[in-house]
Length: 424
Image (cartoon, helix red, strand yellow):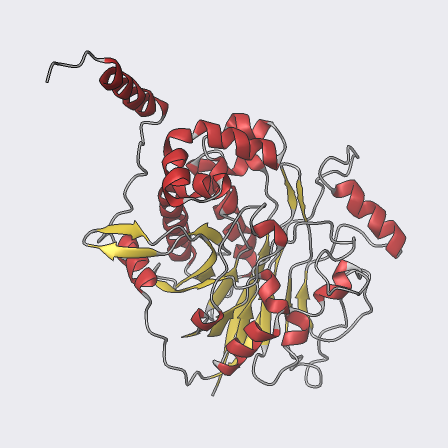
């Protein structure tokens, strides 16, 4: 028996000011569901997929001065100093990098905000919500509190049901150089931990960004019975430039051409029928993000209803398989498009700087009935569920009074060192 569901890919445009406080972040996330609203079906289940690392800039929360620097490295340094009382103990005790220590110092508060915001939106709009992804530790449930498990920090996707319950989580396995040490310093997920989640909107498998280009991830999800691939994305470079990651000894290709090796190619298989690939756009400090959000899959209407028109990313030939595709900023020759890409980029000074397109696209997916059994719940998912159900809390970060607490401790230590010693 075939079931039909509505999939929506949302392409937001972000800016540093969207992350300076909780209200701004909640407003920015809600705007994405408002972009999706006109595309939602009233008669069938809806699957809304958001973009990769949409929780990463929460590290800027409370850091207006850091955001004003306009540069990621300067902002990170200033934020580390601002949150030194929380980050320094983690840096020294857990022997991690400053950028990892900064993120871990704020992990609990940011995780709570992210989880509560996504749960609320799934409930409010009545959709299956793929949250995008955010840097998040793994948690364990200890009584009525969640405790961070080690110093690892994963690029993690969460999937919510329309009632706000957590369906599952997935960590990114293959990290880009910008996500590794020297960048935002995240932790590699484990291939063996990837699972497929049977839901009323498909047997969902997550391949975050680069994972969708990797045969080991696609093979794992395919063998697990995935019918709908979820590819949240944050492409950190100009869309009409050259690819940044390519095999040694080969020349880099135009990025849209290289992108055809992810979602569009995957759905040519007999197992994975559809892929939903939302991409974030916008200049975040001095970082550029661009792309074209798409939903790909077989064209079942090709004979009976005329089918979907051939289309493709800019700078690539038209082709079948794109059920929905958000247009890029402009049309033109490859050279003209490369120039526009540079004009859009951070720091260009051009009138088109940051003039990216946001929006949403949708497609109806025709899926067979699922025969999969839900995978076992992990300890991390059990901990997050306890939090979302109000049965457990995320404790505040240590030294939550910041510099006042640190100065008090330093003063006490100085007094203990300098006080007169009694006779023995």
